[in-house]
Length: 155
Image (cartoon, rainbow, N blue to C red):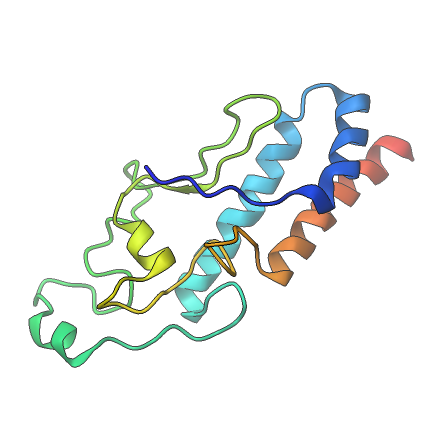
């Protein structure tokens, strides 16, 4: 598995405040994981990356070799990455009270996130996977969740 870490320094103050008041951040991480999972699922429908950039269409060579049994959608040839009846997609959160992991447990998802020499990038999680940066809307969604938790604790 390839692991890319996101810079969370913009959220550190909120996370510290929440941890001080709650101790256990698992409920917060569950909410954050759900928000990020929904963002990724939305990208599947909009065919856009975290910056709003539309994914590249299939290459003619992909179309020529596409299996008849395929689903006919970008990043959804067989449903392996998206099928919720199996372990293909997971919010791998709650590793501890201070770690949230969100990602795919299919190794080939890395090719979509980073792209390859012969396949354009079709980002799902990161605005820039090399730097580990999230898209602006994702950062705002995380900030909103954290602020909702803070508001609820300090009201």
